[in-house]
Length: 137
Image (cartoon, rainbow, N blue to C red; front, top):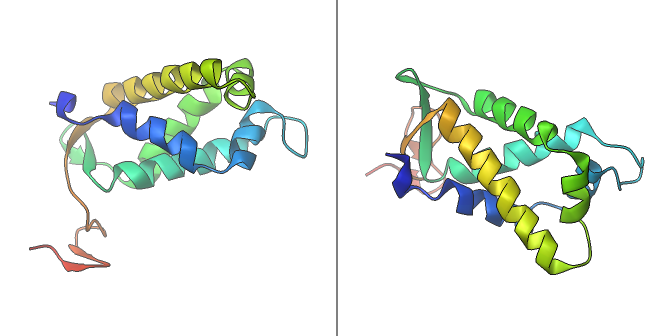
């Protein structure tokens, strides 16, 4: 069922959209010069917000809230070696893009192993069905 959703591609795109300070914090290259766990939380929340525009998540048939998904992602992000994030903030685009692919694949695999992913497009605001563009049709 998850084959129709490009979770890996969506995560890959988030690398371009997340702020450079977040990636620097994960690589230990930020202001503090050490790895910042808050950056893993911010990146996980960003990924979840992007994915929730098109898909939903269930575990054992029960809907999973965004905080639980973000927690799984945060842990997965934090488990990625700091050396991989150093490559992600490097100057050379070829190894940087290869690492983005690799990390995106690992995070997508973690999500698909933990959750059942199903179609739940846009307008997600709890179960009320209202969103910035109005109610679901």
